[in-house]
Length: 163
Length: 103
Image (cartoon, rainbow over the protein chains, first blue to last red):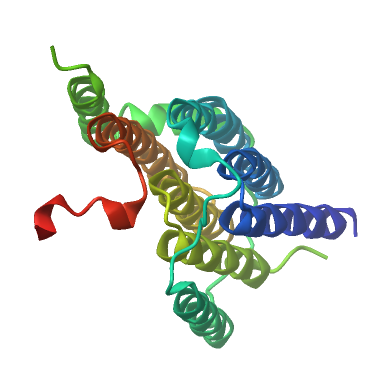
């Protein structure tokens, strides 16, 4: 019973905060609701018995990405003021399209018979995950590090002041 | 009683749809980036739910989620650098006013 209550609370916080992110008039408040949505997703990861992913979610999404977004809003402050209209003319079509997509996805989720297995999660997933990352998945791992380096250099070059 | 996989998939579908609405309806470039982040989070919930319920012994789902984290971090760094560069040159980040290629 307890996991179901925790799941309901996390899902409610995540979806409510996400709705606030996309509808709030003040873009800075949206960024703070984004942190709440990320925290809700992290608690869903804990419920799914993936503690490493939950910690990475808090470190990268809340600790880095959300703070970076707040920085960008502060640097472009004039845009973040309350009196600016934040949604465009076709928002009603966007809302109908998103609602239609949700109905289609929900229909797919309930019409497919998922081949759920009853195996339990191994004891120390973090150890196995580390070994897999540096043996089976070592080439994607190295490619990801090259991608991060390229993004680092690229964002410095794009963002720096031209003299 | 355990939580059925459908519930997680439904939450992820809702989060993805909300993010899609944000991407399509915001005028502010940073608002659009926030919508994209919500959509990437929804994908990650799906990946971890499939790992937990369909194949918990091998770590493929978790490894895939870690790569999605990496790509999301790279994407947001480059995206915000672009936003700040555009703001410096054109003094706006409202998407409708950034129409250099139309002229």
